[in-house]
Length: 146
Image (cartoon, rainbow, N blue to C red; front, side, top):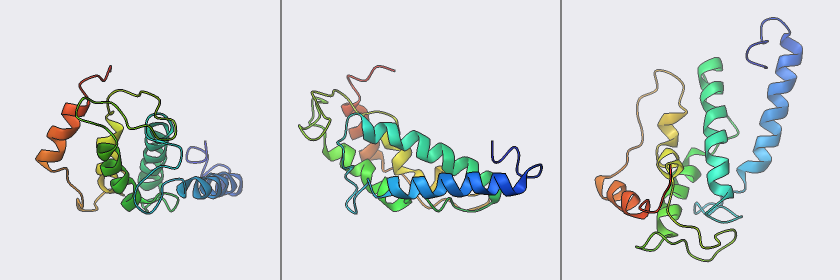
């Protein structure tokens, strides 16, 4: 709404963007400095990656800036944390909400590429996914249902 109404109702739209940013800054700390998500790997970390990146993409394309409420480096570390949290059979380790969770999801790759996915247009690529990491992700995705 705020982006669509930015020129029609600028004061209100700016307040909405500020509220979104303020609330999202609180959530930003759910991903720790080593990439772990405080609530576990299977449910809530995946649920947070998509909306964070979607909001960051809209913000970057609308305002030409990096969304201040996202921590790309931590999301990239979270991708590795996801990879470290599954065994070779695709079963998640028992931590937080990881109740017999099977298979990693594509959000892990989105997190690995977070710096590029949500960068403002014209910013050169800064992240990549190593072929070995992609192979490991694919092996852990064996049980994934899309």
